[in-house]
Structures are given as C-alpha cells and as structure tokens.
Amino acid sequence: MIHLISKFLVLPFYPTGLVLILLVLAIVALVKHNRKLGLIFVSCGAGLLYFFSMPYVAHVMMRSLESRYNPLFTYPKSSAIVLLGGCGEPRIAPRIYDETNFFGDRLMQAARLMKQNCAPKLIITGGKIEFVKDFPGSEAEANARLLVEKSLFAIDSSSLLIETRARNTHDNAVFVKKMLDRLGMKPDIILVTSAVHMYRSVRLFKKAGFIVHPAPTDFWEDASFQFNLYNFRPDTDALNRCTVVLHEWYGLIAYTILRWI
Image 1 (cartoon, rainbow, N blue to C red):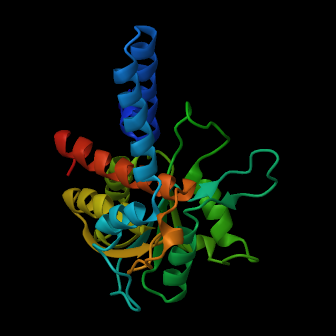
Image 2: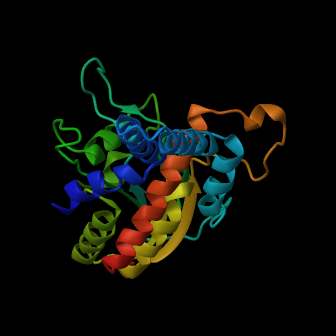
C-alpha cells in the first residue's frame, strides 16, 4: 500500500501538478465570472512553469544534491558493490533485448568497479512495482543479463548476487543487509547509483547498518553553469530535471517522517 500511496500522493506537488491545479482554479474563477482572480491563477501557473523550465534553475536544484558526493578514481576494497535499480528497461515488445534508460550510467559504473577488482561480489537489487509496469522476472534480473552479456560488459555471472524483492530504496537497503547477513559478509559496500539519488541512498544504507563508500555516477549537471541567453530559455529537459530533484527531496521528507533515515 505504501508504494501505491508514494507514487500518487506527490503528483500534485510536482511542477506540472502545481500548474494543473492553478489552471483548474483559474477555470473555476472564470466560470464564476471572477476574471481578475482567473488571470492571477493563469499568470501564476505560467510563471511557475517558466521558472521550473529554466536550465539555470534546474542546475541549482540538481547541484544541491549532486554536489554532496564526488566520484573517486580508486575505492577501498569492500565486501561488495551494490547497484541500485531504476537504470534498465526489460525486454518487453518491441524490445528483443534488455536495455538501459536515462539512468543507464549506473550499469557502466558498476561494471567499471568490478573490472577494477574493488570487490569480489556485485549485488544487483531491484524488483518491480506491478501497477506501474509488470513484466516477467525482475529489474535486477534484467540488469544482470545486461552485465553478463559479452558484447556489453562481460561480467562473470558467478560474481553476481541478485535481490529481486525491493520496490524502493528503503527496500534495497533492508533486503541487501539481510542477504549479506545470511552469507556472513561484512556490510562494507561501494554503493552505485545516480548522483542525484546518492544522498538519500547513503542515509538509508547507513541507517541499515552499512559502511558506505559512495560511487556516484550519471551526473546531470556540470560543476559550473555556463551563463548565456540560450540557457535561460524554457526547456522541457530542465523541467524534467527539476521534477527529479523534487522527487528526491519529497522522498527525504517522507523517509524522515517514516524514520527510515
């Protein structure tokens, strides 16, 4: 139930949700012949949409999370590398192979660390939320197939541990901890996820009792912003980046309330 609530409760608080609410309020005001109030709501909606569509705003918001951890050239030898889900697309028609999505750099980072012998095991965690997308197997299994495919990463399948029940980041931490405890492995891990998602992930894994070495990847923003007129235009990609950041901050608020972090 909590997964269902979490997916729908925040929708009105994303930029597009807020703008839609303002437009509905504007329509109501105009129907009631309150032209002035209707125009105020329309103006606020347009202003809000432009604000969250500016690349500079997206840069500032994204860097508020991405700048918390920097990638390293070398990492300490650990018990395992943990790769969080959210980076793949299962082989559902018309796909005939498993594919990556816009978080696919996570897979490359995990493979890179395995090639560097940072840990003897790579734990791939991620189940599925059926009401969002149902498919045979789990996301972790799809990502594992990509990692062992010779034309892509050629990771030895014997070095992989697959966790298929997790449906959110909290589950990732809980189920991976149980796996390591069951195998008698020290909870000393290199954590791989997108830079924007790393802050929440580190807090969750530390709360679960892990020693965490963050290995962020998939940076959406450069360290510095290039100021020019072009980067102050409305941009749908900037709107998406702002939404991703808000998703993380709302997640932090929710997880704090639930005492998961």
